[in-house]
Image (cartoon, rainbow, N blue to C red; front, top):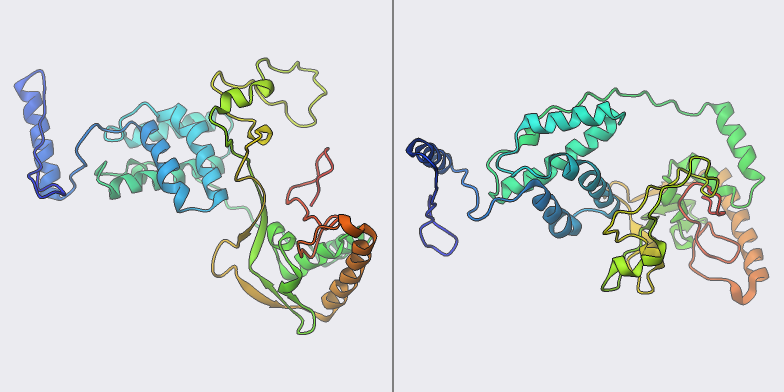
Length: 337
């Protein structure tokens, strides 16, 4: 089949119940050799094995945190249950398209199916580059068409009402900054005073505040979360949970890392913005400079009132004790953005 990395001949062996079956396999190997698309030697990965390896050892080191979270959701909730048992060399576009049809029949949005499609396509492209497969079946498979929705921006009257309502709230300037400068939620909450030059009327957008999920730091995550495992479903009239009641934990559950005494890699993180284009310096209009100047004075008053309880992290928008705001919607536990 060619030459291996160590310089020795790359010989392949095939077996079959009949002479015709062996001949067919040999001709397939010759076709791969002649086309220059020879898969790596050794045991062929299953889709589940490859996706797990790709997540933990490849994607985890080269994509951003939120991208990896999306990949992991697609893999664990859709791809592995749907096509995980196939060998990656035997995976056909029809297998993938049947999975997409089942997802749509289950009521999932076309956007969700497309996200799963992009994840599978990215993982199999890496398998092709590493010669584990010769063809990316996801490149041929067709995902459902996604209808493009037209963005409806706020009208002038709606923006004025929003700013009026925000002006009555603590940290209301944050909404004026986000609306006037077009900042994302994490970018606005990640602003620090060294990034805001009120004299020159500019602000630098370099980082964004985001919340990351805690991970276990212990040796036995399942045992660590033993006290928090949910084994029975909630009753239909359950009022304990304000949001949708979570399903029971699987038998080998390794969640509940936020309760781990040795938890790691979670909580609020100030991360660089997504791209080079996202790092930008924006000129502030005079009205916004005035609002930020007043906000700075109000924050200094809160700092004097908090005394030694103030945590000086340098954020523009903080809690009354200097802690950064959590970049999440308002929930029943008092967290707010």
